[in-house]
Amino acid sequence: GAVVSQHPSRVICKSGTSVKIECRSLDFQATTMFWYRQFPKQSLMLMATSNEGSKATYEQGVEKDKFLINHASLTLSTLTVTSAHPEDSSFYICSARVTGGRAYEQYFGPGTRLTVT
Amino acid sequence: SQQGEEDPQALSIQEGENATMNCSYKTSINNLQWYRQNSGRGLVHLILIRSNEREKHSGRLRVTLDTSKKSSSLLITASRAADTASYFCAPGRDDKIIFGKGTRLHILP
Image 1 (cartoon, rainbow over the protein chains, first blue to last red):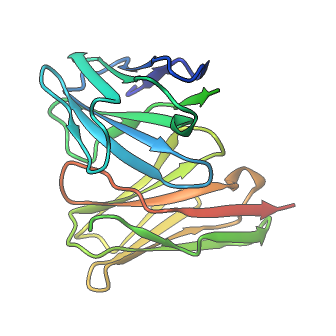
Image 2: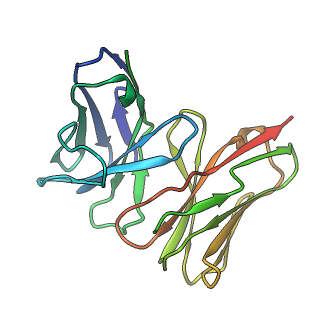
């Protein structure tokens, strides 16, 4: 149980285009999901907290207009990287918190590797 | 901040030896979790220790927590090649999990 999937697992796009990454909780409901990005050999940096039916909360320094988050259902959150540039190339990981669960009950997806050429 | 700081940043040991990595943090916490990440993969939750616990075991893993020193340690006994990964601690207090830079563990054959 408690499986989180991400799609796609890898994506290559051209500079200037937009890319959408999906995060799904497969066997539980998740009112809250989180998006992280990770550069090679570095830590995971929390980008934003995604809440179902409301606007996402972005961490300081993260451009909300560039990283659009939509949490339209209790099992799906999407991250759209708009007008992607090579510096956006990174590993993006989501996590989902069980609805009604403790704050630490988060389950992580396998990640999406984005390469912008 | 709530972020944990792992030490050492990198560790190489021979297969079969024990590996110890440490985590320090600055704020009060309710719990602390340890995660493993294999290269280029997602995170695997290893263990959670609550603030009122001092030690916890799970298989070959032993975690300690000293809230007075604001520190935790993760011990992996009888290391295996498959233990090669990055390990992150996550001190928990509120809604967010903030990761430190991690310890990169390399098990030598």
